Length: 256
Image (tube, rainbow, N blue to C red):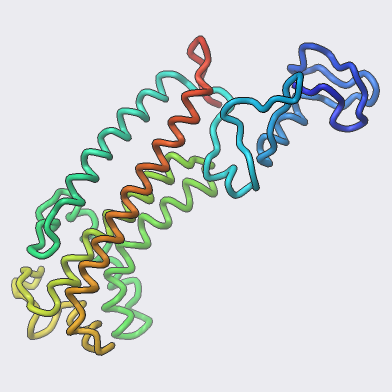
């Protein structure tokens, strides 16, 4: 609620500034100015100059990452809470899988990620053999990364983007055992072999870069990075729900 007109500085303004209330002096529509400022990340004003609880502060980029609808549907809010709880339990389960023995390969999510892994080989095939081999890992990492970016930048849905980031972290967890296995191959590949004679992506990639002796270290590091990304994604989603908690109306209102 504005104390002065944001355009000409006139005061006093109408007590009720909802549409179609306008400044008596210049005629600017007050609700439209407030909406524009909220979308740009400004802090909405109240009488006395206090800040509205839960309003976005800082540059537009931070506002996008923590964007919260002006009115939050109560039913949708609790569904997101339940969804986050499910991803929290699932994420912690995946983080605790032993990357040294390839336990991740027994999880449900390994199957869908494997589809994008194989598609990545085909997608990067025109770029040469080395990129085709790397393309499997790139394919399964690009899919959740693009999903998160689309949800954040196009749909303006940071909560959905946080779930996409969670999937990116899980994909890193899925890559880690494959990297770790390159030094002493034990995992069974789609070819039905362990890949020592060919077909193991990371034996080929690490050997070409002279990094094969460090395969287990890199695999362990990738697992830790994946776990960190999963936890960051869950924290991001939880913080968004905290902000949304302050936007719940007394009655059930639907987001537009």
